[in-house]
Image (cartoon, rainbow, N blue to C red; front, side, top):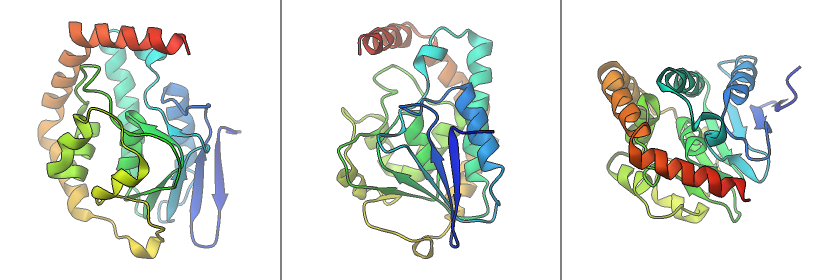
Length: 231
């Protein structure tokens, strides 16, 4: 039985509470548990995905993947993208209810949902891949590009993370209480994500791989891992 993801059923919607680890780091165990859980939920049901109170998700498990070879990182990203696709493909509306740090891969997971509600609190949101010298894999790039449009660089190239209130400038995120009646599935966004994947998937994956194995990225990731070890 999966005890790391909790499914709560209500009359109006279903809730998926992610509690895989303290920081909800994204690794093969998380992918398996998340996918197992979301496939138990009626595809037509309205769904809220939320975190454990301190973290929505801190992103990819750098300890796990930092030393991966070419084939291993490709396989890992395929599992990450499969999880993201399972959110995008849902027929029911999906809201990410962010209640803690939501960064990097965790930010991409939230952005894959139809709307992101940011609860009040002192936590960070955004991306840090540029600082690590990393370009995004195919589906994450498609999600960020098609969700934020002309504001994409404000997400990818921002010098620091955002706080909840600052995310109101991006229409996909809100700190205002919302219901499922308040949102609609943005079919245009979903079609643009699919078009990107149909036409640019291989090219974007090559861009990601070249950046991942660059000297700049390796140095930055090693520094980040050492910093994390000291916490």
